[in-house]
Amino acid sequence: MESGVFHSSYQADMGLRPTPLMRIRLIVVLVAAVVFPFFANNYQLTLANQILIASIGAIGLNILTGFTGQISLGQGGFMAIGAYSSALLVINLGVPWWLSVLLACVITAIVGGFFGLPSLRLKGLYLAIATLAAQQIIEWGIIRSPLTGGVEALVVDPPLLFGINLSRDFNFYWLGLILLIGTVLFAVNLFRTKVGRAFIAIRDQDIAAEVMGVNVFRYKLLAFATSSFFVGLSGALLAQYRTIVSFDRFTIETSITYLAIIIIGGLGSVSGSIYGAIFMTLLPAVLTNIGSALENTIPQMAGLIPFVRKAVFGLTIILFLIFEPEGLAKIWRDIKDYFRLWPFSY
Amino acid sequence: MSRGFSHVLNSSPLQPGDTQLIVNNVSLSFGGVKALHEVSLKVQQSEIAAIIGPNGAGKTSLLNCISGLYHPQVGEIRYRNGKEHILTSLKPYQIAKLGVARSFQNIELFKHMSVLDNLMLGRHVHLKSSVFSGGLFWGRAQREEIAHRKFIEDIIDLLEIEAIRKQQVGTLSYGLQKRVELGRALALQPSMLILDEPMAGMNAEEKEDIARFILDINEEHGVTIIIIEHDMGVVMDISDHVIVLDFGSVIGDGTPDEVQRNPQVIAAYLGESKHG
Image 1 (spheres, rainbow over the protein chains, first blue to last red):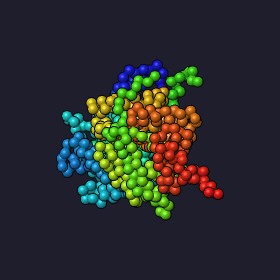
Image 2: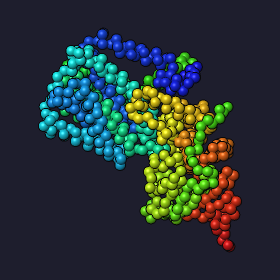
Image 3: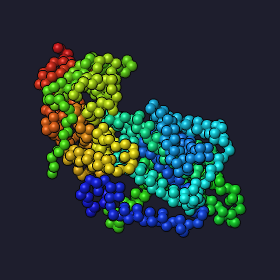
Image 4: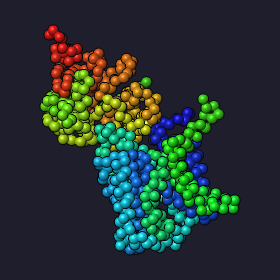
């Protein structure tokens, strides 16, 4: 709690950034995000775009798992629905790419809501297994269906906006950034109003929520649909950005990676989803760079890199679970708390 | 420093003394265990009805039947709120919409939410915003949040929890959590308030505070209250009507004085006399 900050209206008190320091930090981050692409090379831009897409997907998963407490192992499958819907709408029906992205979100929301039906009866681990079934069914459907090209990759024309090719790194960055900002604003607003509060209530104490008038089943389905909408957006963006869609990007491994992102970033935290996405995108990149730097001194290193990456990935998750289960968001909060009263922090 | 309560807390349209709740011949069993056996009782508008009885007598089971968490095998519970509703065929969230609010014996708050958010969740049935309007936080959704915040602030004043309104509930002391839970039930704007041991585990001073809040809510706002409480001193002092349960059956029903003189009740509480 900041001292010396007073509000004279409830509107000001309910603001997302109630203190001047918070607003300054936000402006600094936004300016950095706008300036970044003018100084970055293509490799850095590719990483940034991956982070933007992963952040949107992670916020989607966090709405369901972090905020509503429904563990989902179907993230990869739902992303696949978004990616394939968007690609197939463009390829087969000639829908403009931007409309295909929007429709892909809606389709994924409907599919997600459908696979949320078992949450009427199942909780916790049992629900996790049901969502694992969703993942497998979707994967199987994509490989077997004649529509999706099976194991062959789909190729989409690059998305054009007024003649600008948006699948190029520099151009896509702006699209991704705007959509991420939109997603963040939607999510933070959602969780300070009726529906978002009901989601959190279901996570914390579902019986009490029901007795206070929350139709728990309806809100669980709504959580599945809302979450899947953004997961679908992330999948559709991936399709448009890569211009190639293939099923092996959306396997159970993807689902687990996204769970790792929100655990490391912070369950039930919108900003944590972004921290987690940054961390998990940069971790393999940094390890690969370290590996190639060491190649001259340790010749075997190049062959070991993939294994080291997997080991570090696992180790990171374990360390976070033991030492900071609330993730990077909590670490950042602790740092802020420390400096709030610094240097007289007693 | 209280601003006074500027909203209507009691949402029941009935006149004081009208019959509000009728429990008719309710029996509930879990497997072979009979939790309730042919329980019948009535609660009038604007009274404080206490349900007492030894541990395991079926008090909480009865409350769970009223709030829809349990469905009795026999009998029905009727609730009058303008028109008559059969509670035994409704789901808990539908019963909440009728204005039946309750607190729990073991605190069942939303631990990771702030006190304000917990109370705002109590307003759930009165809020209208959807996923879309909430996500945009524009126009109606924002006005709605502000309007209902005013109601919540009245409850915060009433329960004297101004200092902790932004704290996470899980970090609060037991006594304060109990108070917040009472607040969350009040935020529903109840037509009937059900309190399951609101003073359990409290010291004398905290009990006095809660008793004072209960009397305020009942006398100033006219809210009907059903309370389970083990402290006989408090029960006999504040309640208008006492119902005694023992082994799932009603063994006493009347004013505190009548119940205290009832030989069956004395036997249940003190044990039967060997020579009697």
